[in-house]
Image 1 (cartoon, rainbow, N blue to C red):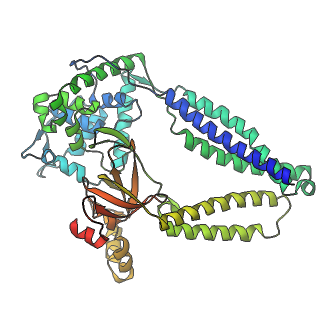
Image 2: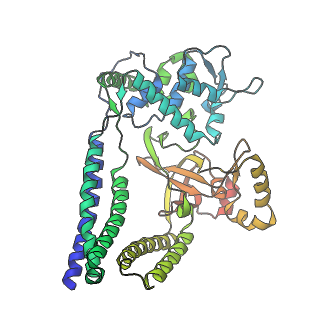
Image 3: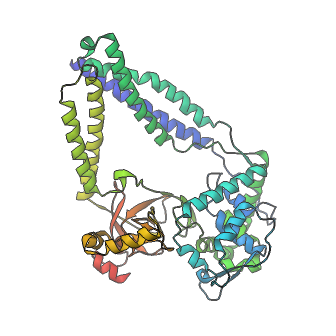
Length: 498
């Protein structure tokens, strides 16, 4: 039996190794075949390509993080709106939409114009107002704008979609191989459980297929997670030529040291060079000042080092938005339920499947318990600048918002409000945000982690604050902060400073 157990463990470890290798191979092929911007010779010549499309090309067709900002400044350069900076702070630049017909705009240009327009008689918005507004549709708005930008790039013959990416071929072939390999561990599990003779040929086949099905599902999730995003976008020959030209424009603009520090209102002097500078990632100050992508955004240009960084958001569904203590408790309850089920008298055909599923769930919940205890016993510290604070969801309507606001500030839930804070009312008063994502940038990481924060914790922070945060690395929760240059303080002292 010892030899059998060793063979069984070897087969299981081999299966896991194949899954990991397949996922990493898919990621490697996807990376090696991704669209890349060819280098071009420095040139000051601007060609007829919308800045939003330029931003998409310069980011390898993966994202267009500054499409909205570049389009706003392009509309100003073309006379559809005006920017007026009354003081030294570029954030106080006033955005006025000029009345009259705005013919010839693309759908995404019209979307940006509608975003900054206000009703007659209402004071026009400033760039700081646009960056502070917490619109419920922020992420959806940005995604639709990028979709419209991609459609324009396709219509211009700069990119094509629909071709099967090589990484997808590797993924499909690998999963077909795993379908066969997943049956091998099932045979060993049934044999080690001593069910081969008792079940008979039919029962063994059913048990093996059941175990193989479970392993295959787990393998698919693992391979897809390791493989990452697979895109079928490709630059056409014309797209490579245009991207090469704009790469040369970026090199030319980088040769002007003062250009990076120009505010958005300088579009009146520099004309279209400012919006294209934002699209190309070389107009650092203008990029940092204009932010129409209110809400959850996956890619931003950080003001620290002028870097394009990706934000990794933790999942918030089910128990994933809960604290480490809640996860530990749920793991203990789960293991107890598995033990109660597995120890019952089960039919011979169901016992192997129940044991396998129960063992996998127990391992998962044991992992949850260990990681949760690690978060509770040893919280970590991270330092950086707060670059974004956005709600991770909204719920309710105007009437529900009024009722729940009174409830959270009333006696029944006052203890919860004192501990984590009441849900924050959205700017238009039609919904509540139960919590926030806080994004810290250390100035070097290409991927930034968004930390879950309660309304109380988030209310003490502002974009631009340099802080050291106490976090739980597994649950991705922010539990406290202090200023970088200050001595450690408790939450009440931090609240007093902010």
